[in-house]
Amino acid sequence: DRVPVLGAAGFEALRNNRRRLAGRAGLPVARVEHLLGRYGSCVEEVLALVEADPGLGEPIPGAQGYLKAEAVYAVTHEGALHLEDVLVRRTRVFIEERDHGLAAAPEVAALIAPVLGWDDDRMRAEIDAYRSGVEADLAAQREIDDAAANAVRLAAAAPAQHVA
Image (cartoon, rainbow, N blue to C red; front, side):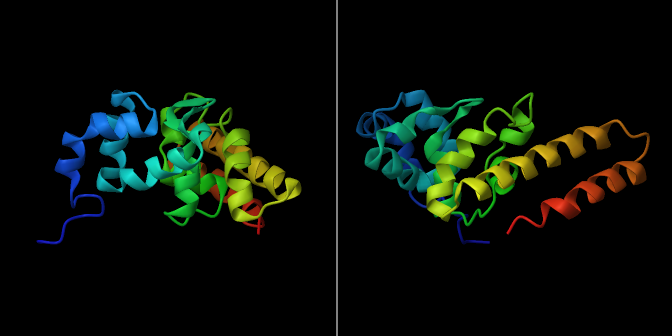
């Protein structure tokens, strides 16, 4: 009960220095405040990615509320191994974007592919698996009860798990 959650240690000091952090990373203060809310004191790891590659400080096309660095961070620091993991679990793109991240998926896949050692075929397979998952989720939402919705999701999940 006394162990702070990841990102809590040093949070207040970083929040007090958000203008300095923003200036160092070349980002608006509001964006750094938003990142502090997501990552706490781990924000420095995200900002280090931006400092190393300023292009990662740009928003993800199709998911403007997220920086490209956040997709890379999901892989390099949070253990994400699949496109779905980045868009559904490591970020909230799936639930925050009207299209559930379909427009962002190719860009995010291109960002994480080099880190994960994916070739073009693997990248396409990840995008296709994500698209299938989104389509299955939308189809499940149209079902009349939970059992039918679950059956739709399970049927779609089986082929998607073959992406190695």
